[in-house]
Length: 408
Image (cartoon, rainbow, N blue to C red; front, side):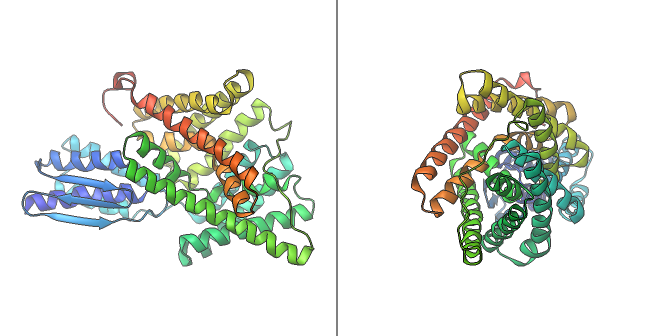
């Protein structure tokens, strides 16, 4: 009976982490740490991207289907702290269970804060992708309106597929209207910046990390899920163009993003990366006390990428590789210093370099039957993704003593 209680608590901890954006290795490690501390060395845990299998010697067996509900990294951090307290003998089994249940019941960030985060994130990443000040201002407004739709309509009432199709549709229609009114210069910049809150950054990053950790099934599953979201968003954009053409008489033409010379300066890019990451720290559910630290990691990573891409012969892929190494190392050091899971720093730090825009344009061009641009964008997005995987693998292979003896 005692073994069953321990395994139930370990499974609860793993359930909370998995459904809120933790990587597979962290979930397994947390469950094993809890069960071992309470004297159960016979527990066996097998974690997939959307499920946990737990067994014990006393006939205990449990299989849970755990769909990803959206990133709430604050809960991952809280569970991590509970496991630390357990390791220090500060919690009894019942106290640990009560704390985990209270973490599971934690409310996400207020909707107004999420809407503001979406607006700020859209504006910042619109500038990162090359948008002008006016494009970023339009993306700020559309990002706020889009997340209002997500919070009150899509998330509570629609499936993931329909929600992302309609999200892409709503965001694009708003961009088309603002562009027609003169509020915004480059339609491509406005669209990709405004729709960036819909991009499954956590699923995509964790998929890359799972593959880097040789968990190929979970990694491939998460990446396929992310690609499905990209496809739905692009389908919504194409649908909005088709309906727009019925009323305007012509189909809008976009060929990707168009870099603005002023916003392309390093200082502007640094500011955009910092502000944009702050916005996504809110959407990813990062603890408020870590907003600034996550934005610093992302800014250092993005500036490293910009400098290497502009002033060396490495090109986009090489610059991404070395910038990923910088972000991964900073994430480990920050995690050790602030005693916070490395996950929150790596996910937010890598996010500016994730080829979300490239994948979006690949799918968009493919859905629009423009094979040439789709192939070009797809090849570059794949190369960048492989560079991120390699960067994470290289840092993971470094001796742990460089970052601290224990994993935060």
